[in-house]
Image 1 (cartoon, rainbow, N blue to C red):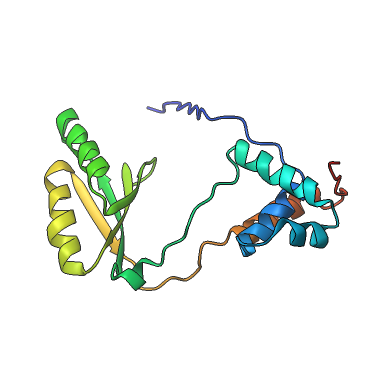
Image 2: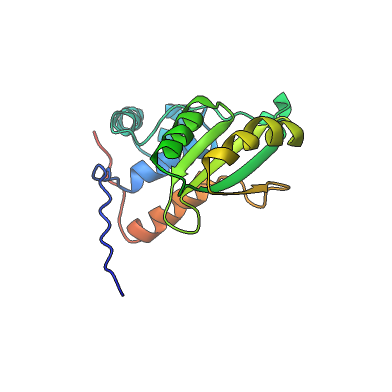
Amino acid sequence: MISNIIVFVMQEPPFVSDELDLLILEYMAKDANIQFKQLADILKVDQRTIAKRVNNLKENGVLKNKIEIDWSRLGVGISAYVGAETGLGEEDVKKMYEYIRKEPRIIEAYSTIGNQEYFFKVMETDLHSLREEVMTRFEPITAKLTSSIISSQLKHHDDVALLRFIRNRGYSNKKIKADT
């Protein structure tokens, strides 16, 4: 039997950016401490335009102030991606959700479509603690649990490259309009 699946993803409409917004984001992604005056000089627009645009990006939730922590420098040297299925009943799903919410070492958690119903990123100081303190608590409330330990990073999170791609795809033949 073939069944049709209709998926509705409800989200806010995207912020409508232009090339200047994307350029500002690109330079700020390269150097979060860049001054508005420097940006204005580089992009050849008024400093007030930069300030107005950055403020607008913040107000619309596009730009968020956030720090990046190198956890390995603080002794948190193990990162694991964990996949899980439930199938054990509604009570176990509730227990799993509660565990995810309370466990600070689970830094990301997603409900998915695919081989695994749930996907988590877990951080810990060592393999023993990961196994004994995090994974063993998952086992009774999941039907199938898989994990992959990160041994090396092949590509670092690269906002600049994605911003360039979006800008080049959407604005390759358009000129920047400055706000005054």
